[in-house]
Image (cartoon, rainbow, N blue to C red):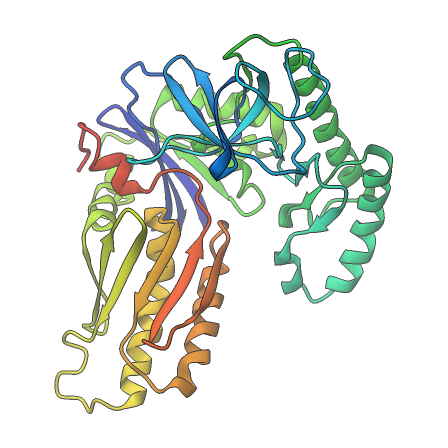
Length: 406
């Protein structure tokens, strides 16, 4: 049973996506101590503060003292707030920008003018002139039929509006009319926001994306069977969100109240958080993986540990350990919300078995709603993969802040 569990731990809201009692994913609120913060997807009226031609970028002030990075390309579309019809931005121009990446320890926010609006069943990309299907539809036996039906709706929408986007897997059971209504509702939302933004003032947040604990519901709505929280404020927030955006799912919402055992203890949330912060992760076979973080990338080392004690060290033994490690690595990337470049040093196997390991890793990563790509195995035997950034990893939120939760 897929559930969402939300509870407060030391003042922070911790939300977990679980499969029965196995936690697959965390969303943790950050302690900002009254500081202004933004979510990925927020749209702000920013002021162009500096233009750096040698890196084809500009720095945009989105709040007093907060500068963000905006790459510049020849074909990018910029919406100006100060009446400018178009052209190249100059210092002090007011422009509409969307938060694309959250800050890290060494980098500030990253921005885009290629706006994206995420809905329950579709993602609208106004600067894209075509509708696409989520790649996850390829797993369906009747993929050709689904594509034909949905694309006819999508092509009609794109022709009439000039906008594009992606139809999400959650739309699988929608009728043509329901899908059409979904796409047009997102488009009307976009037009309303942009029109309001054109008359906005400096630093105004024109659109505020929902926080991550609500996006956990939105992005998994079709498979969630129960939403549980023991925090009254969160319960009311969930109820209001579901009432507005997914009223049929209100019946899945429950307020947990048991004096004998807390919700955190019932689902071992603190224990799982501790494991998600540990450097070493043991596998059932007795092997283990070591996860190291650097500024540029994440490095994961696979070690045989106790798995080969008393066993022959042949290719099949090492391959079995590598496949077990690949399964755990895919789970850890999702659980810890790791992103960017990830390098995995598996136990050495013949090159002829490399493709088998790549295919297995790709299959494991498909269970994650955040997109990942396996590049290849290098000549040195290192697997290269990437995972899209969707917020800060757990270690940045919990260890690098002054308030440690576990």
